[in-house]
Length: 303
Ligand code: NAD
Image 1 (cartoon, rainbow, N blue to C red):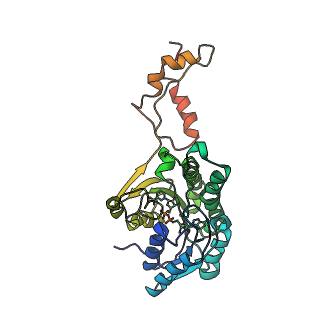
Image 2: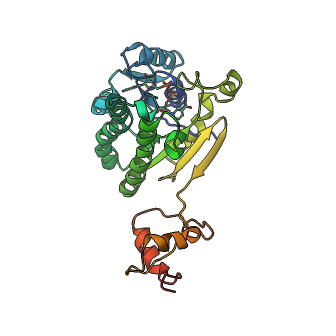
Image 3: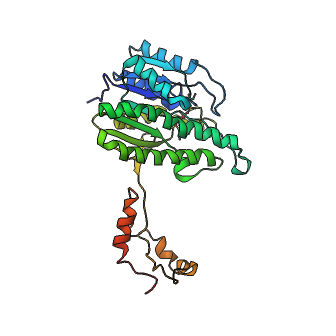
């Protein structure tokens, strides 16, 4: 059974190349109306050109699909959503994919390296989502896929700015999932790995061959489908590998919060603090209060 998207409108940001292009081609081939957004910027966010989006729109149309181009920066996300509404009268699926890099050691990172990364990745996803949100709520349907990175989940040399923005998108997604669920707005976030101009200089030819962007598409398409019930998920995906991630918290130690709670008491109980035996998998701030309640039975420093 092929999952199809007939009558649905999909907005893909940064769809002029790399992963975004493959998403756009796929959704169009499965019946969706596609907004191909791309600023046509360089990998480090310089310049602009309508060509990147136009080429993908042409490709879709030649194959018999429906697509329109949008050349705005995601910083002006409301214009991208407006393009969808003007052309197709709706938006159902939003894939926040546009991205750039400003890799530099933290020692040499400038304010401008930090600010531009935050603007494109975080503010960009905020702006498109903010504009699509009322439409999603009204129609009681929305699918949002945000794009994080292993750099954000784990850290990566030379990418303090990018890592911060990418993990920011994880928190953004988790909250959207919570606020959207009752309106059937489902939000998930992926940390993809794929051959693109972003990775072509840091990987060997052989590795790049295994990392075709097309191998990320099935997960994104599944998460975007009307039949999926998945929300609040974090996934690593690439080269045909797909895995879900979750937060893990050690069982921990509850200290008595009197004068006995000192740095030395932390030192003495460090092994327990970082012991992941009996770990928990929290999914919201309230879990912490529940934990405190249940932790009353844990050994304390007073013993
Ligand atoms: P890519 O450079 O091929 O594609 C990114 C696209 O975004 C480009 O076409 C670019 O013109 C566009 N873009 C840049 N700034 C924009 C803006 N302000 N507004 C609209 N469009 C803009 O890179 P890719 O590898 O396909 O990356 C896609 C997404 O996946 C990015 O968010 C990236 O950070 C993320 N990612 C990629 C990898 C990977 O291995 N390729 C790994 C982790 C995360």
